Amino acid sequence: MNTELAKGVNWVGHLDWSVRDFHGYRTERGSSYNAYLVEGAHAALIDTVKAPYAATLIGQVRARLRERPLRYLVCNHAEPDHAGAMAAVLAAFPGVTVVCNAKCREALGLYGDTTGWTFQVVKEGDKLDLGGRTLQVFDTPMVHWPESMVTYLIEEQILFSMDAFGQHYASGWRFDDEAPLDEVMHEAKTYYANIVLPFARPVTAALAKLGTLPLKQVAPSHGVIWRSHVADIVRAYQDWVVSKAAKKVVILFCTMWDSTRLMAEAVAEGALSEAVTVKLIDVNATADTDIVAEVMDCAALAAGSATLNMGIMPRLAATLTYLRGLKPVGKAGFAFGSCGWATKGAEEAAAYLGAMQVEILHEPITCRFRPDAATLARCREAGRLLAKRALTAGGETKR
Ligand code: FEO
Image (cartoon, protein in one colour):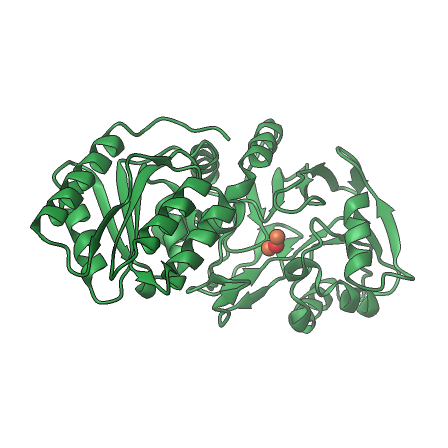
């Protein structure tokens, strides 16, 4: 596996082929925890890996340095998928100075015992002279935690971008031009939707700041390194931060005895009468991780629920709760659903949409037991309404 970004600059991370749940994020292609070793006259390790994989990291660093000492450990982000192996690294390489900002130092101390660690606290724009190579740090608060920063290797024009531009994607390829680009972009979008989406404003600020740097490579903390498609991923982020909507309708539903499914299919049928992309999603059969990636860039959204115990179906409630936290913006839509004797499922779905700041196009469409022809006609008409709204998409919604 080619790990060399430049002479003396290497990936030394861990490929996590098996992980399928990353704090709720369904990682179908696994992930990687990327750490990078930069060698000048002094050597610096940029970030570490999850604690259980410390030995893999330490072995790679030892193999590269042989008898030379490790001088610095730069910590861009205190989250344990990157900082979890710091204690083991410091134990393995005595005399290392931890380089991080003040917030990160505090966070590391709250996660574990940092007594005895030697810190060099840095601030925006500070430089670290490695002898022939220079690292420069930039704060990127809330991308994706308050203490997050990125590190720039000036001579090689490589940005170690932390979570930004990452993908949960385990592969034997370390670079974007080695891997299938459609897979990488799909995982980058899914990653953005599930991790970065609520932080559009801080990401916008970071893009503006980092956009002034000449960039030959962007090396994130997960997935492949961008070197041939830097402009593509930066452009994609520029679209995602402004929530540029596609001409797309998403219909989510959770059914009990297939009546709400029939209504959802009628909504989809109506939407398909226009030249828009339509995604009909049974939330019982689809991971929330994938649902969010579909919803992120849709213009119109419908949510359908049967009524269970005088309320919304729990599985749809979970999906909408997850969506509400991630704050996708700029959608219009409505709720629908069948019930036995109380229309609570559809009403609660409508309340969720309202809490997500979806523009509500009309009252919930409901029926008792099976939808009759008139109800299905209403659903088809509502689907056409969604599609007409989606046809006007293409604008930007700033947070
Ligand atoms: Fe990959 Fe915010 O940690």
